[in-house]
Image 1 (cartoon, rainbow, N blue to C red):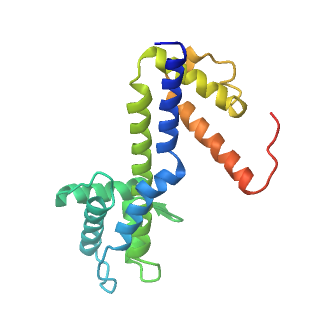
Image 2 (image 1 turned 90 degrees about the vertical axis):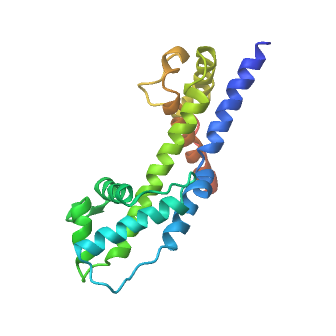
Image 3 (image 1 turned 60 degrees about the horizontal axis):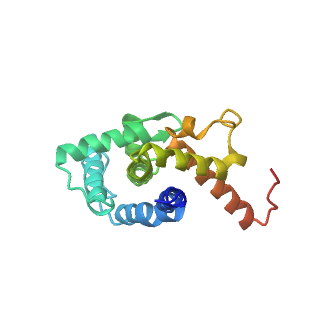
Length: 210
């Protein structure tokens, strides 16, 4: 194997990771299917929201979205879906007066507020965020973190060169050997740098000289 072959292999891994963690990829493969599944969920919007109805609707919603909206379709048992629904609200529901499951129930049962639709919208957003995060971690781990040491070092070296201008001061001057164990962080930095450059170009703003 020539010296250029390891470099090409490392560069190819980086490009694959960047492609499969890019916003457009995530939107098409993760966000849109979840949004479509959430939009197709049906429930009785006129029923008074008792605690029993609330837990039933959020449980059915999670089962529906996981069955139809995730890349790896999951058929959850009722108890699993209920536990997952509660966890999603505990982690992701935010309101001015509180957060978590009980705040969501109070909002859903208040006739002066938006009700259950608002709760399900927040649940869908949090499910999307979790799916995005899991996907990015899996791509980075399977493509980069499990590579051998020479490849990891080369990946770190390439990413350092490409993102040097956007690196926080604390990382500047770090060697590829030091950052070879932080490839996911370096990839996130490269992705953020690409997003900034793309935004500036779209807005017709002159790129700063570093």
